[in-house]
Image (cartoon, rainbow, N blue to C red; front, side):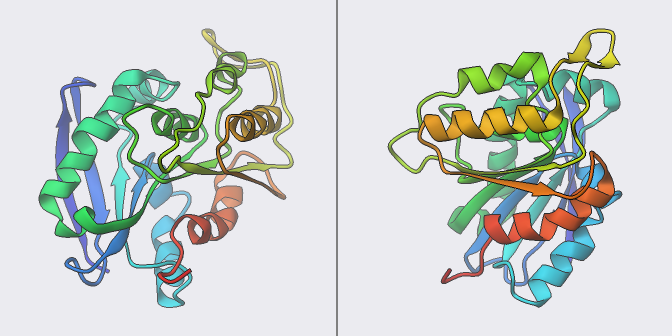
Length: 241
């Protein structure tokens, strides 16, 4: 499928980053929209483009415009991903309007999915829980819900009456390490798997639809690559399903 690339400056984040867009076959027909955070990681280590092409060819997903969002830099990723309101504002108030202005297909989406892994899985979930949210489905692969001792699990708002987002949470069975020092100021006190399970339970208690899945692996590209087809098939089903 053809691709497009543009650069997006953010007033909320005070930086600029590339956006890589995989276009659907017909830009004037209805389609899904998938915003994929950690664009570099998904396009590189996870090999998402090959997976998407295969799912599209076999019609396991519906027509979809994929926007891969750069994390800008390692420093920006550490700052912007852990439940950072300006990053959520960037997605809702800057990225979505920019996509709508460039691509007619964005005006007629069936599903709007927000996808991330590890720290950006946390960022995706936080953004979708904001009052201004326009995403209908969230995929968090090994989301870092351990952050701040599970802070987001304790601050899930009640599901809105009108079209609350649905969540697909997955984690590797080997992600059992706790008391991990990622940086001197970022301490993981609970395991990845415990953090994801707690967030899943909190979502369901608050009235959201939440699917939980475990894959036989760890916190790495191999696990995410193998589980991505199932997650995308859930988020972006063929039309009529």
